[in-house]
Image 1 (cartoon, rainbow over the protein chains, first blue to last red):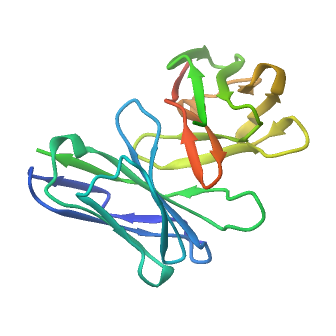
Image 2 (image 1 turned 90 degrees about the vertical axis):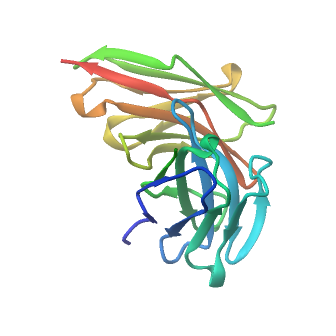
Length: 115
Length: 111
């Protein structure tokens, strides 16, 4: 068990550029979640996948955001035409959907700064 | 909507003193409840969880929490604070397939 990994850890981009983040979940976990965390706030749910299917999306997820999880393994989160308000920590979590527990394991996050 | 409220965005305690971090949930049906800890520039680590059964839940690093339905609370405690406990703590609930996090409580431990 190597844990959830995220790359890059930090990203600085100029407004209007596109960025893509990657999340590698714990290998046997079939659920994968994306969250956004701004300073002084708790994580806010963005979207989640069960295997390769994207099952829920938050209203926070504007049309500029897209997430994929090809083959039900790693996931990518892309933000197009970044805005300064997109600056945040983007967290990924994975879980094994058995029983009713769905305990989540978080990655270290990708900190995005939009200048 | 399911939500949790953390009372007190900052808590300071002396080393060796009791730690009490407050969380209240809003729901007519008891949800699944969690406490997470986050150290600077790191992801969240699960401290403990309540699902069903025993209302006093023990977690890692000496933390425990008690689920009180009558008070809709799930406060986190630790009898004796260590310097290494200084971090951000988040209460969370799960309803369906979504998790809802509180705004966090920053714990400072004074030597």
